[in-house]
Image 1 (cartoon, rainbow, N blue to C red):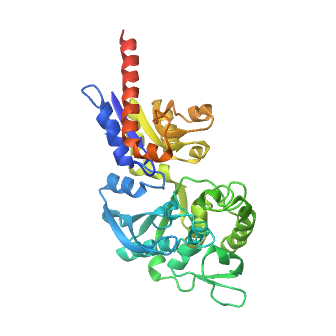
Image 2: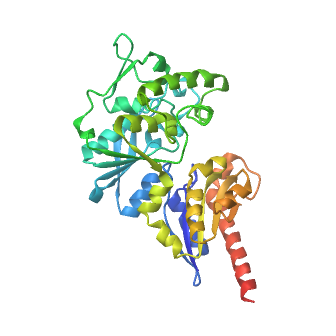
Image 3: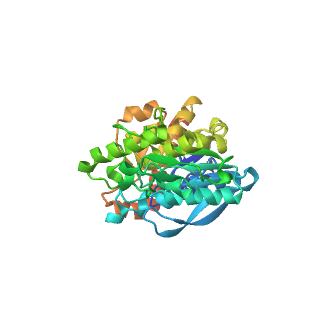
Length: 377
């Protein structure tokens, strides 16, 4: 039996590489071979997945986080392809939010992402893949744009600081002083979100509260981001994916003509995963939490759809699951197995993720052997 293991990172506990190695250690024996594949959908683990699949390098750049503190942010570099891979969460990730005034969405900025992009340009990148998962900002990408040289002005042509509390003041966006290095740069957005910029499934109403907005702040913030987005869109309409990462996707698409693609589909292409799945008997995948949002393009769903096309069953190991089971079954997820075996706090579950996945995978292997034995008899 041949198994493909392509589990996404479980945020705060296991990287994709670590989770897949656990599956390999558990399942592989004289009758079973396991091929572990680092995978991601644009969020945490995207750099690792690309670097692993293409023998790339991990580099670092001095940038600023969403509150303005200096940090070292990692990015991937594929020298032969002159391609940089950047996770936006490295600089403006939700992990930097601490509940203080300085981390309120009105104050936070994606400026550090712009710094990362400029670092990649100076490295000699011809193409940059930007993963947009796990961000904590809702600044419509204006911080990032400022980090690249875009300027913002009010009605009196006075400069405006590019943070969300100044959305209403911005009347003009100038790209007159963008560095020449950006002119021929191809930017590909790897996203797991299909939201447009505004509306019930947009950047504010869908993701605002998890990034620090109170329920009573949503209406005003939605109004302000709508006004700013109209400047970026000009006379065009918002497209699916624009709302990813608090509107960073919209800014990259409208100012730099970036292409928005499914993060998991892009990784499938880069890792030649379809051919590997076609030659396998079972696919194992998973992520930290499986819910309705997973159907928008998360790793397990993208992999399950691919496996379903080739008649290969899929087991998903998850930290938590909610939603309608039939919806997951329709996309090809044969079985979803929560790995937490006993009552525990979130902190305990994260701390014990390795042991929980080991035990859950051992139980799955025992069941698999039982089914095989009955079939042989």
